[in-house]
Length: 110
Image (tube, rainbow, N blue to C red; front, side, top):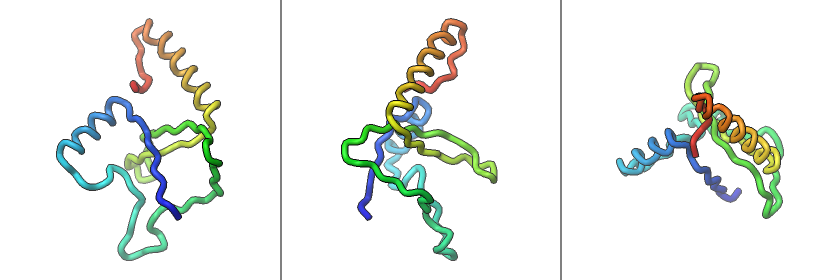
């Protein structure tokens, strides 16, 4: 299997964390699959559904902070079709512009 890199552009808070990580010359990922030395079968990440993207397919990628069942923060990467993602982005921008006038600005800054 070839290695595939997904490039995401972080919001302001994550960007600051990433800049600090780079400035401190840290050489490890900020997120990764779990690996257990005593249980190889439970290690890694298992893709449960077939995922196929034809070449030149435009998609929407987003990263979200969530909590796992043990209430620890996790990073979720979402991949969906571009048109759905674009529509959601336009809705967020419209909501943000209407909320900004009321002083409520809770959308992620890019």
